[in-house]
Amino acid sequence: MAGHFVRWTGDPGFLAERLRISQDVFDTAQHFADKRRGRFLAARALLAQLMLRVYGINELPALITNSNGRPAFADRDLPDFSIAYAGNMIGVLLAEEGGRAGLDMEIVRAHSRQTQEQLMQELTSGEVAWINAQQDFMEAVTQIWTLRQSILKLTGAGESGLDSLRLLPGAGRLRSTLYPDIQVVCDAEPTLVWACALSPATQRLHLWEMDSSHQWRALREVEMSKPNIGPHTLRLTSLPHERSLHPEM
Image 1 (cartoon, one colour):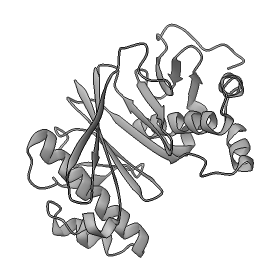
Image 2 (cartoon, rainbow, N blue to C red):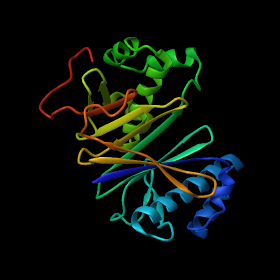
Image 3 (cartoon, rainbow, N blue to C red):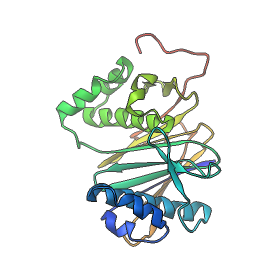
């Protein structure tokens, strides 16, 4: 069982003009402002390209919007996916075989130190302690926040679910009261922090990049069960059900 994460950087209009998305998607986008319309179409074109590559499906299947605002395929037999934006970058995460997916991306140092400190007010004491132990404060805050957002997107809770989630990054553990079994991997690159939340049965995460000519480049494959998967990479897994978090967490 695998997850597939592809990202694309460039003019959203270029990607949106390509094939494999239906007229209904274009019609929906006409109600949006220019910037949102470009992102909306480009994300769905990228999802269509990923579905073609992984499943051989030539046109993007019909989509619905769930009550929490999360897009999904109308056919429940098709895989779960998650979309994220960071600067002019668009990302799509696809989960195989009935798994769930949550993707978040943030540009490194896109927020001021003051904003970073405000974000820390939403975190637990365990998360803050881990951040303070790292060499790069701003990178560490961004990693924790991106981890949190990816998990909240997987559960479908959004910002309203902040209190449902606790991270124990020093122990490589997490706890979501909304979804018992999750694993999440987060990496800090020179300009981008990304986090992919997936079901625990996911064994591999394939990372791809697509250029403006629609050429795909394999970045790397993450073996989810390996203890060391990169110098700036965090992997957290759900605590066993019978355990509870320490009160101070």
